[in-house]
Image (cartoon, rainbow, N blue to C red; front, side, top):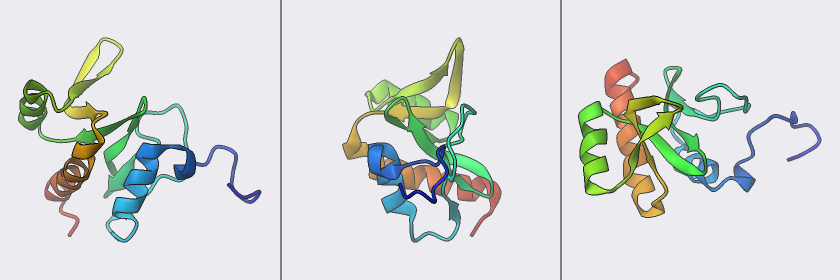
Length: 119
């Protein structure tokens, strides 16, 4: 990062998930990329209409999808529902399998567009 970059800015250069998401969505004007990292959930997330649809979670890709889709993918072994402490986030899938990232990221973006009407 340059000296002009705030110390808490997200660095895609050092985070493979952030780098992947940045590369996939850099030319999509509907997608807002994260500017700062904080301890808040989704602070490193990529957003449509202010709502997070994809982010890095403990070194893996986390995507927001319909609850049934998350369940189906978990049963197939594609990923696991995101767990925050004792709370299972039924609409969030976490996967370390980089081969699945492109399709899941696009599916999550499209899901968020349908939910929030950002064409």
